[in-house]
Length: 207
Image 1 (cartoon, one colour):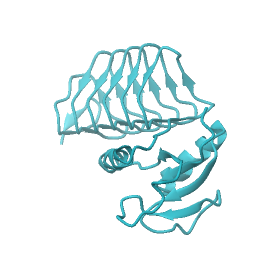
Image 2 (cartoon, helix red, strand yellow; image 1 turned 135 degrees about the vertical axis):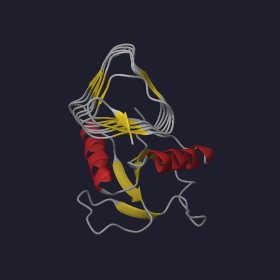
Image 3 (cartoon, rainbow, N blue to C red; image 1 turned 60 degrees about the vertical axis):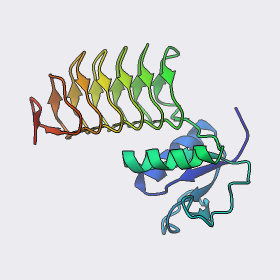
Image 4 (cartoon, rainbow, N blue to C red; image 1 turned 180 degrees about the horizontal axis):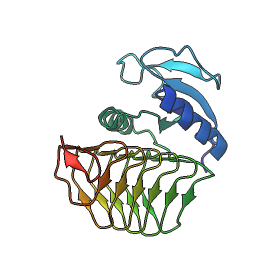
């Protein structure tokens, strides 16, 4: 593992969770970026400024970057900014998660504690697999997907880019979910879902 210092990108509530997991993973998280300095800084990270600011002056440093932004669209845009600068995005995998060695994992991914990612799963770039969620065998997640706490994806589920799967929702085996979809918390999805829709309820219905 590289010993380069890590910059946390975003330091809201989600950022605190990512920082905690990164430190548990043994990464040297020293700095953070955000639009403004945060009032609560439990890990005493040094503020570098806002990475999207043209005056940001740390691109010439040999730092790696950890995405800590919950919003899918902003996280993806931020990742692209960092990559255009030729910088490395690290994966944050909490040591108390389960990650099969047969997972195909992208870059800039966050997997939190008690999550399980099982064999032959593909996880795209910039994804979040949050606390206690389950991504079962042969699922395929596109880029910038967020699987919220406690959500369950049964086997062979396909999830399109930029989609949000709400907390404690359940997706039936083999279901295909499109791009830019929002699945509300606690929903049960038993049928395929088109692009660009919001689904809630049990069984899930479009709103």
